[in-house]
Length: 378
Image (tube, rainbow, N blue to C red; front, side):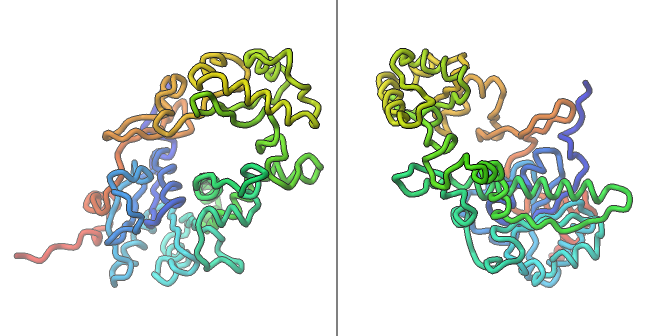
């Protein structure tokens, strides 16, 4: 099979108005898939406090510097938008409009443009204009309340569930769907309102169905998939490490208790009244050996058991190493682009874009000479 270029989005042009968190990650996903992503950085940067050379969410992009509060700034962004397929911004509602680069202004210049808006609360509603972060967004949707032990506060799952799963991924799905519509006969550009609260709520669709059917209790640590089940959870090993356990199906569970060495003594897993005994039996057994030893025991089995690895350990796991799930570029170990395409694979083509480093190239490639005003003669 012939492989082409740098991914299935080769030829798609994206403007990213610089921000932090889910917006840049969404733009990185598009860049990983081959899109020409131009990040519009402002003088002084977004204030994240991360060395730009290590901000992996800016890989595969190019950067230009534009001061949107200067007289020529908005016009330069509109020039870019006129030549783009997609624009992404993550300001609070109304900010882009006040800066002169809102949807109306951009779509007036380019009616085929897909204008993607990334916010926590959405473009409307009582909380739309208030500040927030991932933990508050997932708290309001009920998803945070599902995570953690029943006798402890909800466990904060880093900022993956809201910002990136409920935010970035939904923004990417949205802008690509809108781009497909724009490119159909009679299609046109439109605005995509990607709110983290909407995405995080949408992720819980299956659980809402189970709740309505009486198959889910509305409290954490009491259900099949939230740690309430003794054969779906995490257990500590003798060296203070952990193993993840998830043999939900009977045939996998049978292999699990056999390899664990409790097949003859384990309480019936179907007797919910004895789940506490079963949990203790499993925990006591895992506590007798190290994580490395248990990994050897379950390696290659269908028992659905895996070691809990750290961020630094993960790239060295044999399976992930064999698949090249992590790659190294410019001395930085990082997750490889995902998903994978048989004919148009994505790749890490360049390291993090440094603010303004590509202004001249973009000015030429996109035919926006105003990005590089002539210097005064000496």
